Structures are given as C-alpha cells and as structure tokens.
Image (cartoon, rainbow, N blue to C red; front, side):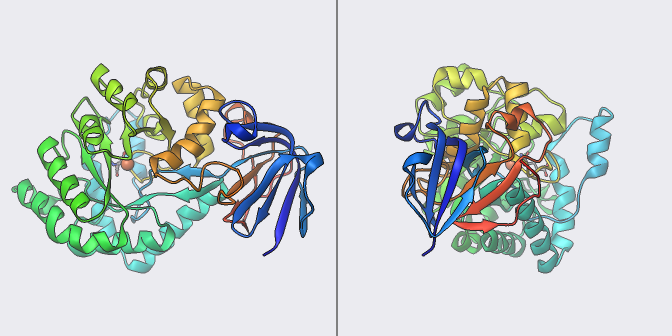
Length: 395
Ligand code: NIG
Ligand code: FE
C-alpha cells in the first residue's frame, strides 16, 4: 500500500479531541498520513513520518469528508415549475412527491442510474464522501425494489422509504398501502437496504401506520430513522426515540417534550436547512436542541421537491447564518454528527484507523465554509484513501 503524506496543513480538523484542541480537535501546522484506505497518523508537521508520496497543502485547511446522512437521489424529472410557483407564494405540500413518483415510474433503470450518479458526483465534488440514499419515489413493489437496488450501487447507506406518501392508486384505501409496505414491499427491498424510514406527517403516515411499518422493518433486520415533525407538530420524534432510531430528521416543529426526548436519547436530531431555504419556511431551532444537549447533524435532504441541493457547504452556511449555529458546531454536525446519524464509527473524523475521507479546502480555515457562501472551496477530496475528481480552484 502507498502511504501519502499531506503536509503543511494550516488547520487540521480531526473531530477527535484527543488529537487537537476543542470538540473539533483542531491542530495547526499539521500533517496527516494515509495508508491505503485509512488514516495512519496525524500530528505536527515537524514530526511527520516519511511516506511514499507527499502532497503540500500549502497552509490550507483540511477537514473530514462530509457525511450527508439524508438524501433522496433515486428519481427522475425535476419540479422547477413547482419551485417557481412556491417562490411566487404557493405553499409547499407533501403531495408534490406524487409528481416525482409518476416520472420515476416512467423512467428506465439507466435513466435513474445516470441521475443518481450525477448527483453523487456533484456531492463528492463538494466534499461529501459518505452519502445516505433513500427510495420513496417508486411506491410499487417493483419500483421500490429497483430504487433500493440502484441506490445500493452508489452507497451502502440505503434506506427503504416505501412509506413516503400514499400513492394515487391507494387513495381510497390507505390502510391497504400500509399493509403492502410492511409485507411484500419490505420483503423485496430489505435485501438491498440498511435502514427503514417513514414520513410521519399529516398528509403522509400517522402514528399507528408509522409504528407498524417501522416495527416490520426492524423485524426484517433494518434499522429505523424517521422523517419527523417537518411540516407541523406530530408524533414522529417520540416514535423515533421510542424505537431507538438512529436519527429523527427535519425536527422543525418540536415541543418541549420532543426536545427533552432527543436530548436524553441516542437519536440524532438531523436538521435539513436546504428544505427551509427552498420552501421559504421557518428554520428549526438548532440553538434550543444544542442547549438541551441533543446531538445535531446537518444533511442536504437532496430531492427534487423540497431541497434540490447536494451541497453540504451550503447547508453549513445556512445553519450558521439562519440557525445561529457557530461555524464549529455546523462543521461538526456536517461531519461527525452525520456519522452518528448513520451509526458509523469509521467516518466523520480523522484519527489513526479512521477511513481516509479527506477534504482540502481552498481556504486557511474551515470558517470560510460559512464566511464565503456559494464559493467552491473544495480543492481536493480523498475517499477511502483514493484521490477523487476535484473542482479546480486555486488556493
Ligand atoms: O424530506 N419529507 C418528505 N420527503 C422529502 C420531500 C420530497 C419531495 O417533496 O419530493 C423531504 O423533504
Ligand atoms: Fe427527506
């Protein structure tokens, strides 16, 4: 295996407090060594061991690759007209999902695969080295099963979301759709998936349906995560915590009891500020969650309806500007927080033994991710020790 030394790092964020200062474990004047797919060494540049190859970071900041723990990337078509109408005053509604369902069902495997690859490539070029991907735009046994199979080609973090919305052909009998999801659809999807998710929301799935579907998924060996409390208050967060879900996602409308439940559990509160940006609605109260002691993650929720972005740097900028997270809190949430939300110990941090997922920024400090919004600062990406295609920007 070839060892690579990344030298002259102006600011190295390890997310490992034993290797640097603060919760981000920051080292200045640092270096790190990658050996094959893993990080072998981090420390002061002056103490760096020799390696087969040396990369001069020239004073740039280096951070762990982003962990985008919530995305919906298997779909066809777009909803630009719906977005334009929304910006002209129309409200966002869960029913828009059905537009994408129709386009997805009509698409070939090759079209879905090409779109998925394009989006994963976009995300990688912006520093995302781990991405979760949900089904949920097929909503038949065959279309959900091909959606999770396609997602599995792109990432191991695959989520079965047959319970995204009740499809039009079941409008007269939603209970029959819930039954289909928890039996035949789950059986077809489970071999390709790690996670099960439910959109627990008025207009989608109520508490009883959500519990029934999540319980069936858990019985089939999947781990739960929940779309919770996005459009209004509801039972989603309580169900997520009660089932030991890895994550409750959105968390926009929370009661005191919801905040308390998240704070005293292992369930991560995953905030998706691209949604509030793109639906022009009020952001979740990140400060309230952080003050209570909840673990917060940031993710894109990339999907063609409520948040058509693959950019974790944009989510960091929004979290800082609009949700009053500090730049450090937002960076941690987009890396280590995402890893917690996916129950992954190997990513989201840079210490010996961690996966070598590394982003070199065209900036001297990671604060620039929020300070220079919209600027392509990702200058280099390694994923599991492999140098990946990068944006061409000068430091
Ligand atoms: O996470 N909340 C449910 N699903 C997506 C929206 C999907 C869509 O509008 O197509 C979300 O926001
Ligand atoms: Fe979502």
